[in-house]
Image (cartoon, rainbow, N blue to C red):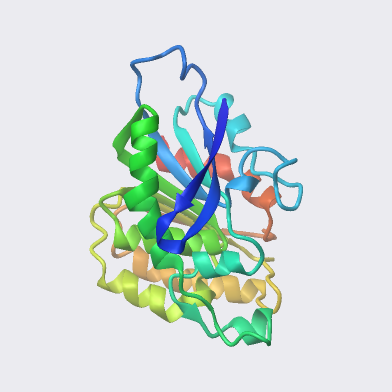
Amino acid sequence: MYEHFTVAMTPLNRERMIRVYLPNGYEENGDKHYPVLYMHDGQNLYRDEDAGYGMAWRIGDYLDGSELEMIVVGVDCNEGLKRLDEYGPWESSKMPEVFDASRSTIGGEGKEYIEYMVHELKPLIDEKYRTIPEETSMAGSSMGGLISTYAACKYPHIFKRIASLSTAYWFNQEEIEDLIRKSDLSAIERFYLDVGTAEVTETIDGETYERTSERVYEILKDKVRNVRFEIIEGGVHNEIAWRERMPQVLKFLFE
């Protein structure tokens, strides 16, 4: 079952669509509470017709056929390059060389985006649905993986299980590495990250994705007690690739 509604993102002074998946039996089991998985790029999570490129992760379909019972909360992304502003915790100098020579920097709104999720969206979801507030996780891909890693460092006592797929760590490489080193991540229960060998984003190639993800893993493995890092041979950078990997991701995180 799916529900959707619009919220006001107070720190960023903009509105956004929230898409919620509720597990089978949610309405019938009126006393049962569920863990919550927060995800970015919400429009791409459930149905192909809603997805930006006509390709969805179809997470609800998978969960309906599995034994995992959870609530999934998807937050739609901002439009165009503004998505990178929200998912970038720090301003990045990669803008002119990768995306658009007319802008010198991009990113820097990630702090406000996560503050909204922690202080406004999570309390709203915990009030509106039968959640287990202390069992909260986060997952995302590409820039969504970057902002998920940032959220884990800033709020490890809240987001205790993290999945970061095909992550664009190169966008804020030095900053995210430094933050991980300085953060107490002992509260993180499980952290999954992966990267494909055929990832491409504009001028960023698979070798860059692989190398930058390996650098983050080398730091994380000494900070989190249960980390899994997968290099996907031939893995590309799109929703179908992430859809195919999501069953193994969810099994690692929650089983």
